[in-house]
Length: 520
Image 1 (cartoon, rainbow, N blue to C red):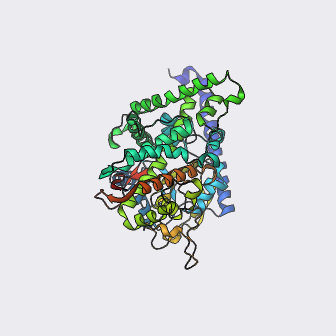
Image 2: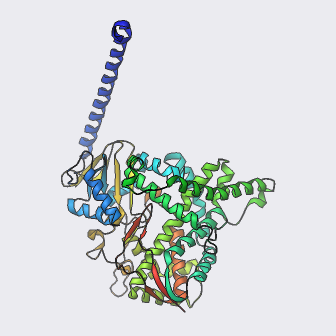
Image 3: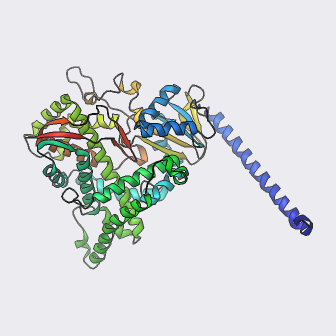
């Protein structure tokens, strides 16, 4: 006797409930269809055209192409080539069963990041991939949690703190003392990552790691780098990385993450101990001249994991972005004697004095050099957001990509800053050339230098624009000036004359900046 014969009433109820569920689902789909049709009709929006690929279901062809490009260190170049192949500035692509719209249209990015940023989130895959390492922080949260993290961080980057270049000098002095003076080969990238680690920890933790004067942090740097590579790969390819690790290269990610967490926990415990000690003192004695991020964190919560997560998020930004920028700049200087001569001439106007914040702002060629490096070699070359609701973007829809673009809820839209920064319609026929002069006014002709808008996004824009961009530019400028004051000559020791990408969460030249320096 079957279930239906033994329990006829339950069987009938189950069939009835299944029918109701099916009808409810169909009704939802119908409402969604009509809502989307109305939105498209009202706005004239259309879906993006598909990139020419033979596998539009699973996208194994694009996965194979992407992995080949990644292993050959030309993923960014390949992503730019796809726009040229398709003839579009916005297209849809499928990779490992996941649909994504790719764009390099400034109009679309302005809407996503500024005008309608509340309609867009980080996306579940990114959050799931990043949180094992970074936890809950400014790079992993949306909504109120993200806004709270940002507001706590904002006082770190007021003018009085960013402009205090004396804070940088102590660490730059350590850097100069470590660099060889006999012209022997040195990879500046190694020292730049230590420098920014030291300055970021002092700026945020109130205590520097001083990794330039001791080697105890080398294990942390290696583990932190490997962890970033792994979570970046997971963000790109999701569960495939976990289930098929042999396709992506082995990574002992759990041990690396534990090492990183233990390292930062040391500062968390010191911060909590300092808070507990200060609670017994008068309020007036608790104030210091500088805003220290960890002091604010421990005053708001006793959750050690949350404190560690917030610190790790900001340490990632403070250490990696500036170090990558400095590495790319000094790799370029080693390959371009003409640029080296120009920057030396400008730095010479300081007569050997350590620059003040105000003097740094007047060194126009130094800033142009940094701007041009961020244009051609952006340290965050790609990004994405996920639509929180059905919406539209200004351009990218229809067969020719000129109509408004319809974006359904849940759709991921990615963009390539690397490719957009190379568009000839924005930067001229020489967009692929490294030419800092494009940023400078020409008094002889009256021609103004570049004043880009949303087509130049090295630090993002809108609501999530990088709070620390002035800190990064000031530190990179100050370090560059002091190095120029200490060394009169530079010679490239990198046999490769073409910049090659090494990309995780940030991007830097593959071989760093291998140079020989001539001391004054």
